[in-house]
Length: 202
Image 1 (cartoon, rainbow, N blue to C red):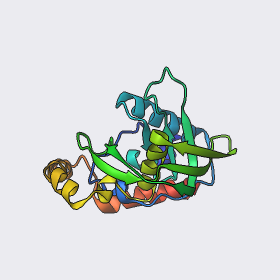
Image 2: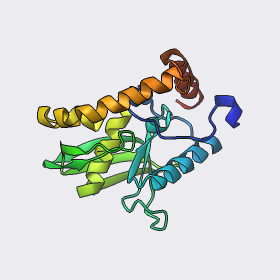
Image 3: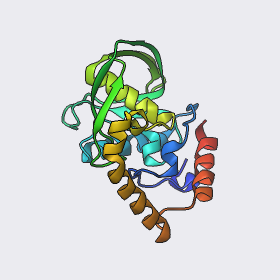
């Protein structure tokens, strides 16, 4: 499938409050050359921004997949592509500081499961089970939340929400400015594009 067929060219990371960040991703049913190219771009973007994980809807794609490399370094080839990930087991609880490439400059403590078991498929269609703990478990939970349209700010305590309120308002103003300049499409166009992409592979 060519890039022209779905209008997908170079990807970029969306910032809050872009509507696609609230889109519930659809399970992938088909992997093709174009999707592999998208995944490579996602990994490159993750490295450019010093991230350890990136979900598809953060780059305006409605697919249930995310990429992860806890080293945040292309020289350390611990890259993982998780397609249709499902958390099948959780254990324990831990609080730690989180940030997000879609909410630049915002950090706050989030409580998550300490260990998780995740089932997913890789790009070759092989089903894999990941036993994750620590940062890996936190990253997977953060990215799977993205695929469900959930942001880490949704999990903050009232006090933490108040602490980031001003920063969120600044991102909202930046988004509104992008809309006024025509840089960011209206919701109807965004929804139509996501539906077209879903029809191609879900």
